[in-house]
Length: 432
Image (cartoon, rainbow, N blue to C red; front, side, top):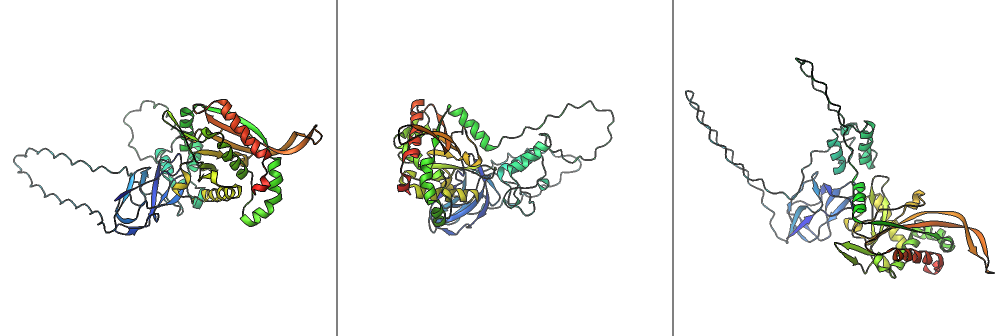
């Protein structure tokens, strides 16, 4: 018998809403077969069964909101009987009417039986439907309730017209940070003039979970910042030769990101402490590289899908996996295993034009690199006769936030210098 729990579905996700069960109690289920579907602010995904057997109990119904780690179902061995439904309590007998001439002394009420302990399953009120939109996410539903808003009056901009966190915050901002007042009920005329009321205190706007996670990371890790400037002319010489053929054969463009990813993974072999996690007072150095690639969800949050065992993959394989994970992240089609457990993270801010970004470390990792915009600019180059000249090359920054508890500045700086050297000198044509 095995308990089925709600998995971690993103670094900042704390709860999810069960949107669909694919099995009912008594059904056989195979290991890794889709068991239920869950929706969060970050991802809508099918969750597979961890074991094979029979679904003997469902503890969270469709529409229920549950915290990460809560037990939501039980899968028993094949042939296991479903959990019996609790028997309904018999209706209490009606008490005889008291004699009219003398009221009977009321008997003390029996102490209520203790409520059974639930597996942290929060029963959700039915989510309001806006034009047939999907269920509201837990965060959005909480914001609407806390600020006394009418969901039917909020225009959703998310997929399928779904109301996003940003939609709700925009309504709160439009009201000057004040919660919407409920419709006033008709009140009787006051007998006397009321005392002047104190000015209403504006409702505090809740911080989005991703911002809260960033604040936690900054408070846990002493962030330090290092930057190198990289000349990508060497990468471009190989990339420009194959980019047309590459797109035709692979179905997506060959960007700079796979080259940077490969250089980072190879540099980690010489600087293994960059690929580590902080566990209490210990630094756990990993002997594999699970490379996280941060993906923006159209300004509605951030997911970090993970390229597993990136150190075993050459450039073309890395490019395929990065493209696949990024596409499925934007379509919210990733599985729970694909968005957790990274050991080092890249944040591709350059796609938005950023030239220098200090990213927040993805806990419990010890470093994160922002791959900022690559632009053409004048650089000094060496000429064949030993002199120098000015040329126009593609240049960009690699900006790294790192945890000063894990290593010192010289170690971080030399790691970045190694990445720069690989990008500027490797024979990438042979790699492709």
